[in-house]
Amino acid sequence: MIDLLLLFLLFIGVLTGLKRGFILQLFHLIGFIVAFVAAVIYYDDLSPKLTLWVPYPELPADASWAVFLDNLPLEQAFYNAVAFAILFFGVKIVLHIIASMLDFVSELPILNSLNTLLGGILGFVENYVILFVVLYIAALVPVAGVQSALDGSLLAQLIIEHTPVLSNQLENLWIEHVAG
Image 1: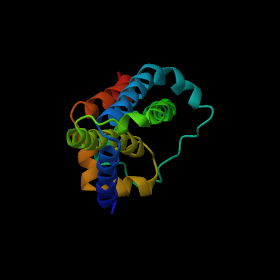
Image 2: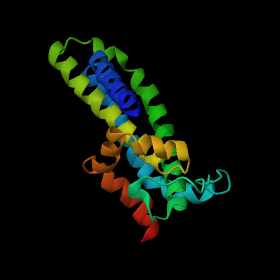
Image 3: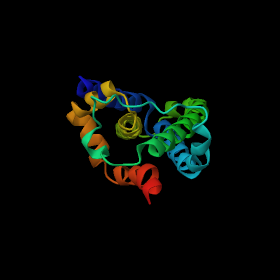
Image 4: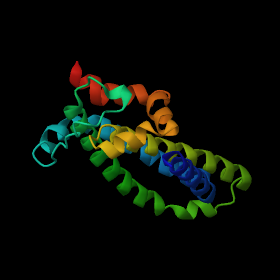
């Protein structure tokens, strides 16, 4: 079921990109990159402050973590992920609003079919990376239902574990940074 939802969300990304076109979708993707960089730079400062505000949920004794999370410092990784998500989605929303103000650009007659096709590709990429971040954060949440849903989803596991560059980058940021 999770796999179907993920495929649907990726398809929605393509449709959104086709509608926006390359230029407007490029503005949204640049906003995405800026949000990602801001979150990478500042999550470490926000993470310690969250321990006072966000309780760390415990995984029930009869449940288990997703396989790739065994024996890792998950509490600090959880707070790192929450701090990253707050910063990432906060900046992303602000920049999304700004990019939406530029929607008149999509009306310009610039190589219309190529503009549409490249917009679809960028829309897919943007939704894929957003899903990657959300799934990675979900993998760090100690809730049995979330863990079993991720364990039962082949596509979610592939996205989390085998996304080029990003899988290693987030593991280094949130987990190995804490362990090392």
